Image (tube, rainbow, N blue to C red):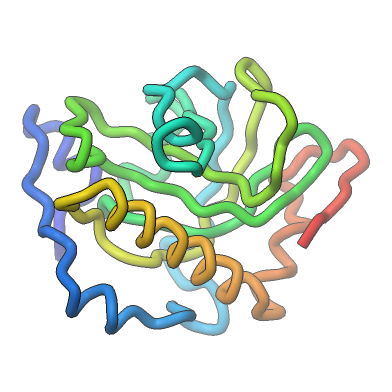
Length: 189
């Protein structure tokens, strides 16, 4: 079994990631995982959104909400680095999300991060707000890239795969999970 993200972080140095190849790109499925989430999923995360590196929205066209280190322990202790899908709640809306858990090798990060991209066009940032997320499945391993364009291309595929996975009825039910705030909810799909 591959080491968890937490086990990698304990080693003190960033693990090497495989480079994305054309073969990987052309062979990607449009839906992944079983029809019902299986262990270790769902994994609940919650934390106050903090400023990250500022490159998700500006450099990659994919704004992310960065959770504090202590709030990613539930996933980093049971999951490997890579790209995941599920739902996230910002304010009253529960929305589909895709999340990167890892070292972001293209940018040579020195620390493990969880960066959530909520699939909605927000008009403002939500730094300082509480975000809750349920991680429901794994899309692919963390990869390194030879170009920013290749990274962006895979991010766009990841988003489509996440949406396809969440269309399955057993996954849709998690949008109303008690993990999300008991305040009035508006589910947007």
